[in-house]
Length: 120
Image (tube, rainbow, N blue to C red; front, side, top):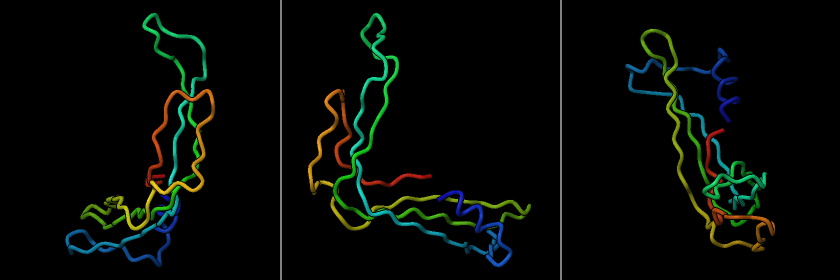
């Protein structure tokens, strides 16, 4: 998303207002799935306290929820772009996992089904 925003902002046809005007240009993206992050060990080496040194994760799609990422952009007095990013969750339900796919056998933890709202 950030890459697309940067490309758009370089286009001379995109009007970026001055921040002093109180207006901005908004660029929004929506996603519509949920993810369950499964955590698993990558190495068998452990510290004396039994803590794992390396872990990895896998993503399992689940549920359905709408998330919106918005980039609000205006131009400061010195010409630099002021970009504010916000996330919001819309409709849908991540707890309605269909099907309810389990994490791999060697998993040591999971997030459960959560909205796929993040900044890229």
